[in-house]
Amino acid sequence: MYDTDKNTPESELRNRIAALQKRLTGKGLDGALILQNADSFYFAGTIQQGQLYVPAEGRPLLMIRKSLARAQAESALERIVPMKSPRQLPELLAAEGLPLPKTLGMELDVLPANLYLNFGKIVEGTRIIDVSHEIRQIRAVKSAYEISRIRASARLSDRLCEATAGLIREGATELELAGQVEAEARKMGHQGVVRMRLWGSEMFYGHLMAGPRAAMPSFLASPTGGAGAGPAVAQGPSFEPIRAGEPILVDYTFCLDGYISDHTRIFAIGGLPDRLGKAYMAMLDVEGTVKRMAGAGVRAGDIYEAAVERAGELGYGDHFMGVGEERIRFVGHGVGLELDEYPFLARGQEMTLESGMTIAVEPKLILPGEGVVGIENTHLVGDDGLEPLTRSSDKIMVV
Image: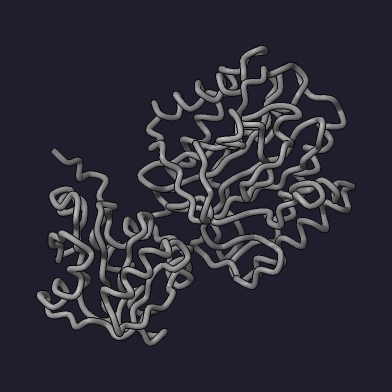
């Protein structure tokens, strides 16, 4: 009934729990309560509705409200018990010989205020402390298993890019083309859901838009926005037709078995004007600057500053990653189970890159009235630099 071939290996969960317990001990916490879907999948191997309690020492306890049978089939954790209500937390812990923690870590970056207040009553007398930063630090460095999943996702990103070239035709709307590309992605195994951590952020596969519409800003923490289907979405592809001679931005994720690769290529019907071609080549130059500099031990903020400096030297400082107040102050971000993971190659970021991190590097130029040109590839951080995981041609794809 349940497909267990894609279950997270027990050894993976054991190592992840151990890493969290080490952080809890270092922070002086008695335990952590995990609720958010991506974190639950990471530490328990399932997103079934419930709570995962990880004591600073000992075996974790997964308490499931719905669906218990599915959680038992999907998760390799030893202790999985039914739960009717979050209010049962103290008694379920007691039944397993776990004392009520005096200090409890929770994901306060994503936990709704009402849930936080409710848990404050459920574990009255317990001090709740944010452990989201520690969780995100653990998740930032991928295991060999995770890297294999992201590699597989990246290979499908490349395949999708090749398929996209054959779908583009003049006069089709951005939304029509997006639907065709997304259908191809689903045939290849794209899971559909693209998870983001930042509150209020949401995305459907990615951004596909052409010409001046691509340069429209939006609420999203992204250099690109797009007209979208209307104010209710306010980003991404629109009902406008695609025309010859304008840059077609295809900035899509591929999500496989939970893991994301991020990938941008520029297409054009009949080619682009020289000024846009030169602007695109400048972004390849900036990408090269980042790739030569990035590697284990390098400060993330320094990489961003080097990219900004190079864009300025090439004459594109005023349009790099946005224009004016709409500019985004990063040139890359971590990817994994979520699209916006640590590390951020952003202004002022003190985090240093570590071997095993996976990052998307995305230098882009926003040119109002003309469109967007740029590139994005997912990379694996190593001791000697970056290994590209998305490998399709970096040339403008003329159709």
